[in-house]
Structure formats: structure tokens, C-alpha cells
Image (cartoon, rainbow, N blue to C red; front, side, top):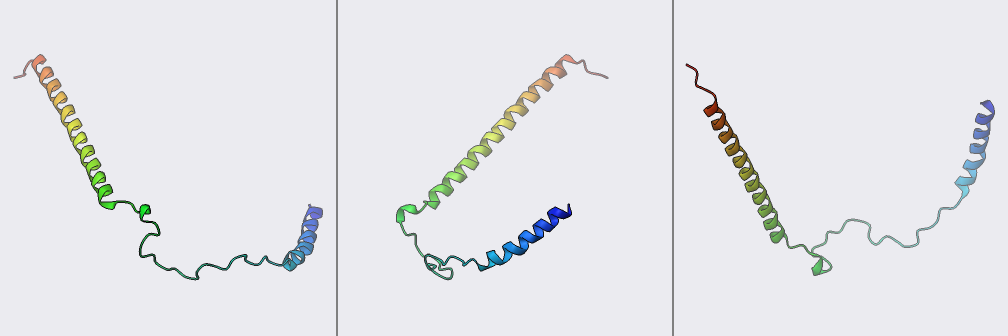
Length: 95
């Protein structure tokens, strides 16, 4: 174990100065800008999304899902009420 530890320390002692002397590559292109610049309009008008239409579609979808859920609950409740009536007709009343 000591042998491996001494080998690792020797490798680090030799590798760190060699790695520290390697020159860093210079950036090939300068940065386009140094800070954030807000964009006032899209570069290509075809890249825009028609927001009012998408919002209307989303609201329509939510309403369809809501009405579907209410219809589903109503039909299941009607079925349960019919079953309760059928069972109550079969069971004699207690006095």
C-alpha cells in the first residue's frame, strides 16, 4: 500500500509542474458581446408563435376536459342511483 501511495505522490509531484507549464490555447474568436442585450423583435417574423390562438386552444381544451369529467361523474352517479333503487325494491322495508 505504501508503494502505491509513494508512486501516486511521485506522479503528482512530476505531473503538476508539467501541466502548469502547458500554455492555454488562446480563444479563437472574441466574444460577440460582453453583456446581455435585450432583443426588441425576433430576427425572423416566421419564428413567432401566435399567442392568442394558442391561449384560446388551451382554454378550449381545458373546458372540453372539464365538461367530459362532469359528464362522466354525472353518468356514474345516475348508474349508482339506479342500482340503489333496484336494491331498495328487493329489500323489504323494516318497521
